[in-house]
Image (cartoon, rainbow over all chains, first blue to last red; front, side, top):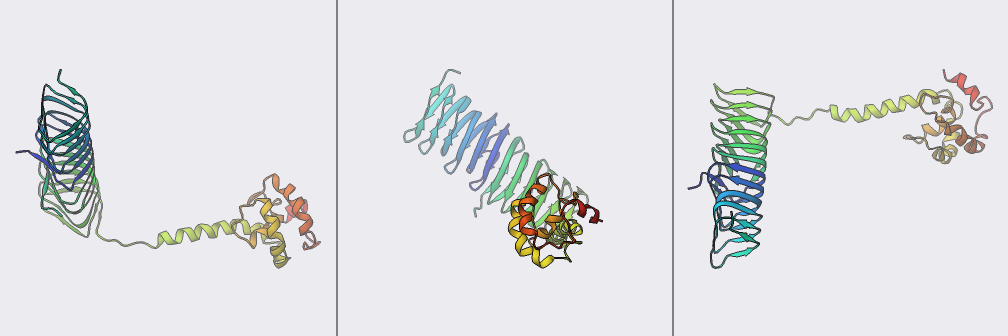
Length: 104
Length: 212
């Protein structure tokens, strides 16, 4: 599905920019800016500010998210940070701490 | 470690430091540094402006930066690289473009070892000429006595034995060391030194002549 995959043992310290889907199974620190979808898998750890179209979190995210479409935190997802998106979906079992702003 | 493959897609740009324990295939753009313990594959559309440290590297795209591989580096027909290669095995295929240095060994030149000794020798020589005339007169006597005196004089004494002898000569020889403080220091130390000094070697002014 995703065109770019960051494997589970990869650590990226910096900035990621893309125009396609991104799947993170490893660790990313810094900033992520995408025009498509971001998938943070179970083993993924993201300590970054994220700006994308949609975000699907099954791993751990610390940072602010600004999505133009939708943010989804799945049951094994954990997030600390602020969310700004017109649509938000937090599944039962997810852990979330932060503020939510749906007025985009 | 893992069988996972990490892929950087064609429209993705990564700026920063990348490290990992698995293979990495780049179709997009990476700027910064890459540190892998496995294989790095840069595809034809890949552009990497980074310093790379990997086990193996296969370059089919564009690389600007140095590659240091612990096993091998291969630049394929579509590969273009500007930078230095450091690897025990290097494969450059016909059609590839490459500009830079290639280092396939880990030989260490002995030059690095010589330098410190040569510089210290030169430093010694600088001080010695001033001391030379006096040494033959009373080298042995001065060293035990002069050492305590020499310290307050605050000379950059790198050499214990030679320098205390040089101190009396020092004010006279401005080139090696001759700050204004020294004559004052000498006076304090001189009383100690006077007995060992031979009458033929007066203080200060007279010695100036002897500098030659």
